[in-house]
Length: 236
Image 1 (cartoon, rainbow, N blue to C red):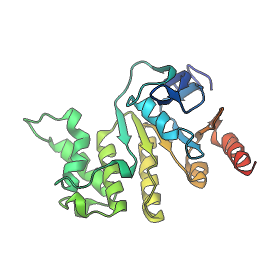
Image 2: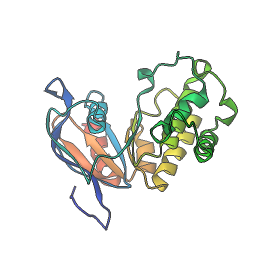
Image 3: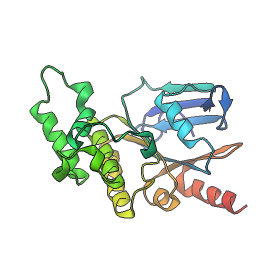
C-alpha cells in the first residue's frame, strides 16, 4: 500500500518491515504499508498467524520483533477492546461504572462528570441497548451484554483510533449485528477502525480494507481483492 496521501486522505500509521511476535520470536511476516486516517480495516488469517499479536504491537502493548511503526504525525489515543476471555468480570462495578471509564482521560476526579459527558455516556448506553441496565452489577451480565458494555465504553472514549480484538467471539448473531452497527457508527464519525475478525462474510459486507496474514507473507489491500486470496489459500 502506498504512503502519504491517497485521494486526499492522510496516513495515520506507516509500517516499515514490521514483524510482530513475542520475546524476539517472529510470528508475523514483515509488513510494509499504510493505514489511512478514517479507514476501516479487518485483520484476518488462520489461527496462530499473529493477528492479535500484530494488533497488540500496533497498540503499543508489546514491542516489535523488528521493523518500525511510524505515527503521522503523532500517536493518537487508542480505543482498545480486548478479547472477552482476557477481561475480568468479578469486580464490584456497575455497567455505568465501566462505561464511564471511557471518559476518564477528559474528566477531573475532583470535579466529576460534566453534564455533556454524562449525556455522552447515556447516548452510548442507548446505542448498545443497555440503558435499562446502567445500575446493574457487571458480574450478572451475559456474554453479549458484557460485550455491549465494552463497546459503549469505547464509544464514550471517542478515540481517533479504535482497535478491536475478536469483538464478536462467543456472542450471538443478533448481538454481533448490533455491535457491527456500532462499529459503523464509529467509522461514520471519522474514527479509524482496526479489527481482528474470523467471519469472512462480515468482513466482505462491512470492511473496505483487509490485511490477510499468512505464515510467510501477507496480502493487504481492498477487501474485494484480498478475500479471494484467503479463500484460495484455505482450499489449497
